[in-house]
Length: 304
Image (cartoon, rainbow, N blue to C red):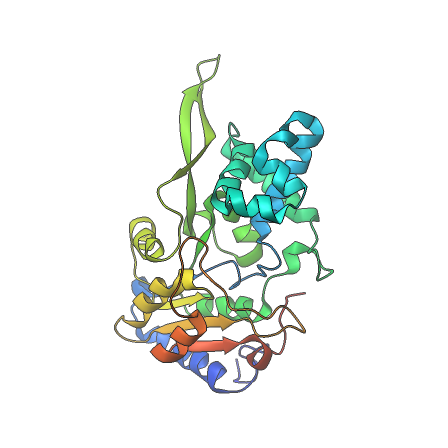
């Protein structure tokens, strides 16, 4: 593959040069140590105006209310359905999110996966006029493909729900379910009337949301290998970007800056579960990370 063929959706410049340099040196690392961790929302696919998983939850809420109109009176659901910003602010996003998680309580893993895949097969982005499944970033797909050509294990480390992302990660990114680390839901094992074991979702989160320092801890506990490349876009990715950058040998801390209002959105990504003293883009520049300007560095934004 020639230099021109490599990463065709990345424009020439310092950012592309840094990515290519990492690709050229990653094979100097023992294969067992070649690990890359990608955040998902805002790093691999579009996260505005709402997270994709939130759109999935709202879709499920509509179906629940249609089947059971009384559900619309639950305060969290009433606020969402009325798009009452004041009520949503008073209740808090965490409480509303947990109410939405509860919509799937009692589902088996297979049932939940089927619902997620069915939604993704038909859902459209609310403002970009394209299927949600096509709102993945073509330059990042190209990077993932080049990493695989060099025997790098590609994983996804997301603040979103593990099971939702596992339902679509292999089809969208070629990442198998066991290589996805996200926020976990607790399960309960019981027995049916026939005595067969049943594994069912609860409405409880297992541990903390997978954001900030929790990402580093969960990478170690669930993947067991330190990444040489980390790609993220928000303050929730800071610790794992720092962890990768502080490693030995070839490393790459890649931060996506959403500065393209014309082709996507223009904003500074923030953590959802804690406040930040400094914008993540300022942190990236100060710490010497490779900051990707979506407007300047990407010739193409979306795949397909």
